[in-house]
Image 1 (cartoon, rainbow, N blue to C red):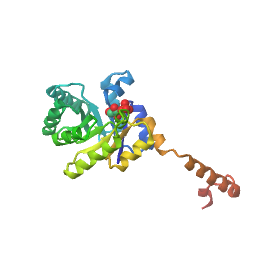
Image 2: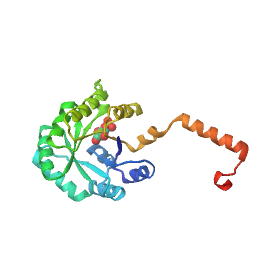
Image 3: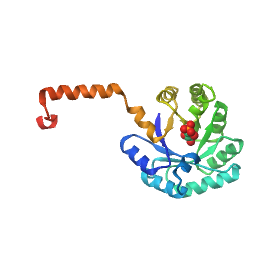
Image 4: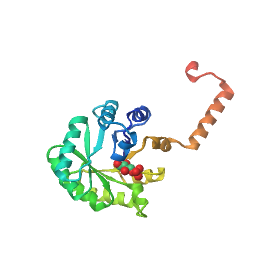
Length: 225
Ligand code: E4P
């Protein structure tokens, strides 16, 4: 499973990339609006920070297929590099995904809440589908099983579409979708520290420090070899 950052803040992503192995960035209109800044500027800054090779997924705001396609093409032109147009999993979205596939534009079907939505988007030619895990859990749906079903369907039918799970509230959800075989995951920047932090790791490190100091004081291993 690969990790992406769900963010429209280039500075936050730069700090994250410095420490964590991420393969790209996803945004959505809510995340962009949170920044209260010009969309073009935000995305240009993001592309500058992540470079041309990392994935940048940006969402179209249109609801009719033709308009989605035109917007996706404009976004790809402006944002360049490894670009994915995020297209909502609607009937018009399916039409747009199919058309964009024909034009060689990579797409991510977004706002996916069921395995059948995911399968249809994959059949239409989506490169990724994004099931919303926590938003499903909030509806008392077993979101982890939905992700598992999507992975299984893609495997069974030999589809190359990858699952990009989104919407998380806790580390266990992240681990569960990884175990289900989700190919990718997108998380808010602040979430990554929760994945790596463990109190037992901190305790083990304090023990190593104390044991070393009890014999060698402030000397460093590199000074002794
Ligand atoms: C998809 O683009 C987002 O990751 C998703 O909407 C975030 O979901 P949340 O609002 O539950 O965090």
